[in-house]
Structures are given as structure tokens and as C-alpha cells.
Picture 1: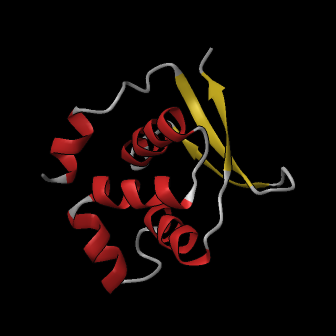
Picture 2: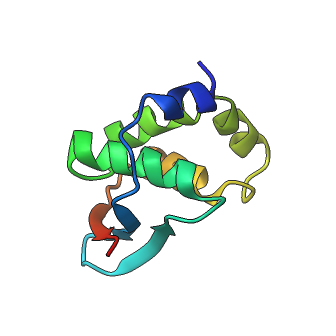
Length: 105
């Protein structure tokens, strides 16, 4: 399955303005906003948060599967896909991130 095929199966994100990713201390690591260029990542991270409750190493592995062909590109070109790089790092470091949904008004 391609990334675009996988996206079609994920829950909608029209109700979200962003997802904030927080470290163990509650510090904001990054916000993935609902805007062109990041909506696919928002959908993936939202799905992982709904399914796993946090972005755990197990969730990150599933996310890498969902990114499909983009995961290979991210591995070949570190820094090109920061939202995928983050998942790779969580798997490798066995760390988790908490999520906080920011709902659209």
C-alpha cells in the first residue's frame, strides 16, 4: 500500500487545528498543524494517538508502515521528512511522546 492509499483509511482531521507532541516532562517538542504540507502527517499522528494513546515505540513502528514509500526516502535522506525522522528516533531510542489535540474552532 502506498502512503496515499493508507491516508484514505485514516480518520478525518477536519476537527483538528494541530497536534502538539510533548516529552515526558510535558515540554512541547513540536506542533503538527492542519495546513498544506503537513496534513498527511497530522492524519498519521492523530491515528496513532487514537490507537495507542501516545506515540510509543510500537506506535512509531506502525507510523513508519503507514508512511510507506516515504519511510524509505526518509531513511535515505535524513532531515528531509522530520515527522518520519521523529518516528525512527522514537523506535531507536525506545522513547515515547505524549500528544495533545488542538481542536479547530
